[in-house]
Length: 112
Length: 114
Image (cartoon, rainbow over all chains, first blue to last red; front, side, top):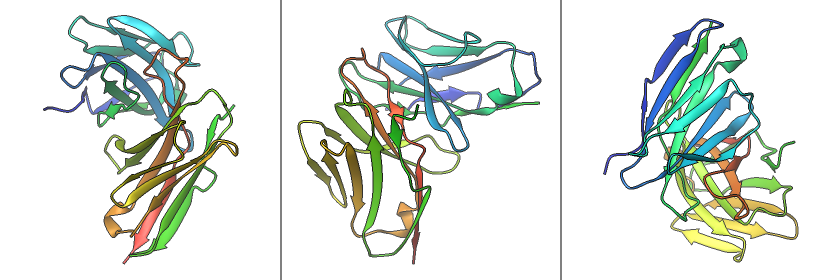
């Protein structure tokens, strides 16, 4: 069974641009969560989608948004990029009713 | 407001000895706890979890202990191996949330020396 796949693995953008990250969950997993990891901050929860609906949202500005498609694949968008958005963005998937999440390798975003 | 805290950024242990990683939480609504291991350039890998109705869960060399009154959990690795060297994150969730939301600590970097 394939794991969680995130694309691209690396991205370099400049301030003010926008970016879209993609996540394909494990087959059969319908919940997809997104996290931001920065040095010293651990992983911070961005949002979670289930059946194409956002069920949970963390404390991030509205520049961070996401969506989920009918095949459970998810995208995350960050608009008007800031230097502080440079981070590792991780996607995780889980089956219904389980708190155990399985993570992808992440997308490393650098904002110059 | 850091609801899950790992106060030790790093830990160094000799191969074959016990590694004990600690985690504290403040939110009494948390009822499920997990430990993840992370190698550089990889995503976190699930290790072991525990429900708040238990105080101990064991899986091979890994044991997680939960002390609800102290809002404290710990991960014991016995015996420690050099391949265990990684960053370990504890995480918590609440059944009051609809799912998919884990709150993570800052991580503890474990170094196991041969």
